Length: 265
Ligand code: SAH
Image: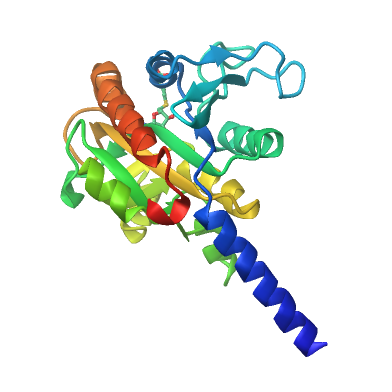
């Protein structure tokens, strides 16, 4: 048995090496809010999919097209069918990530969006942060090992050359399903050593990992969580301007990725 297993390992390693040498071709960009997604849709001249790859009746929207040598898909979870607001948060993000991977078999996922930043960690409004690690801050399960499962820390795909080329900050991301921050969340976010806080990233990372698709996370700071302004107010005030910075960074990232394989990022 053992020699055969060793052979299989060798074959598998060779296959992984081969995949890593192939230039990235299909990209799925997961974006939670319409305001964040639409400028990129026009920048890449994407069109909305009318023959949906998703199940009938779901609000999820796919915009797609070719840009340079890349097949780009922007996936937006759409508006809540009853309330009409963007379907933000981890549940929608996980579902669209899963469905997009199943339907489109991407070589790479980019989760782009706005986030709250911590000035104690050097974040300023308008900063664009490439995420090195993700974790959850609102999944408290105080039982040995389940506690770590709840936090769900994972590393993202390392992209040192992309970070250097775009001259972006690198930091850790903490994800939870609330825009505000309870004292309990605050403790967990500090323990996660987070520079930025959002409502989707760690969920996208979980699904991408589950299905072995590399993922990167580009987050732009709309509000300072440890500052003196109320989060919701600051978020809305900065959303449009910061989205422009986010979209510029995502465009540059896509330009950088074009023609390269994963190991060159
Ligand atoms: N009131 C907003 C609600 C959007 S929720 C609206 O007009 O629709 C906030 C979105 O931005 C989420 O997708 C989340 O990932 C991100 N975000 C920005 N700042 C955040 C913060 N301080 N905490 C958590 N998520 C934040």
